[in-house]
Image 1 (tube, rainbow, N blue to C red):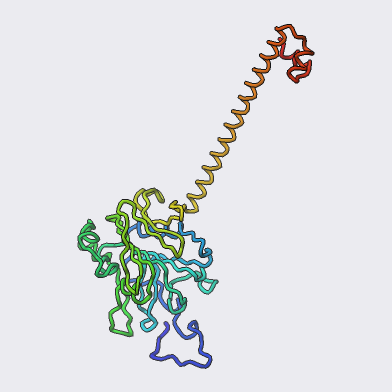
Image 2: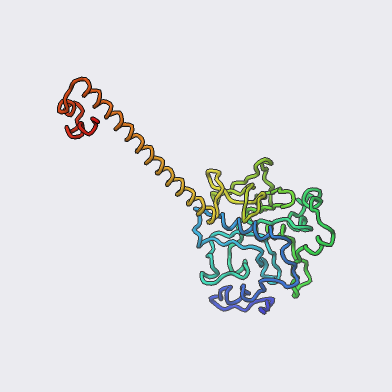
Length: 321
């Protein structure tokens, strides 16, 4: 394991952080003593956020999203980390150094902080996630879980064995250390979403429409909102991305299904158009036949009717039973 010394001997020119500071290969990607995810929602909701994020401002290879991944934020305490339920970084390679899948996100190696962080409230995490903005009567009391369950499901921070300092809370890390521009907190128990924007170095909670909570992130030209619908066989309210036309961005599976439905609808439309054209042709032929018969019955011969209708004499004869 990488050991961080009080001072790093450098040369001129100085070595890059990749060679002097711990990387994701040196730091653990998980802690065996840290409790697992409290429920399936913590798997499905982050997955939906990643699958519906499509941004015109950044190509896919310049976007990284992490789910329940160690986020190392303080080089002075290299073992200190947080595990956001979901976070988004833009302007970084999709793969670590363009070649490898990330096992963790090490801020002093990446050089770019997350742009959006989403936390899903779990039993006992409201204070950690919301700091002084936690409202126990809403975020905590609504959780229908026993005290034992709450204790067993509370995430633990891994203490830096090289220091007796207490790691800061998630709120403090996101606001003061990483300065994440947008911080979103969702409670699956109350379906309440809270949106915080970094203004002047501090988070300011943004006012949302309680009937249709949505937030627009102008830098991404995308918005986040609560959508009522079915995802992976579960119907409930989900946090997902929407575009400038206020349309919910589909997942790849939903988009494929929509394309198939559109193709079927187009094929049905073409079939109906052909049926309609055939019916119109039959009606036109029937009317022309009646005109021919009327002219013949009026005393005209076939040649005269042909000249008048533009038909051939043979066609006129065919119309005459």
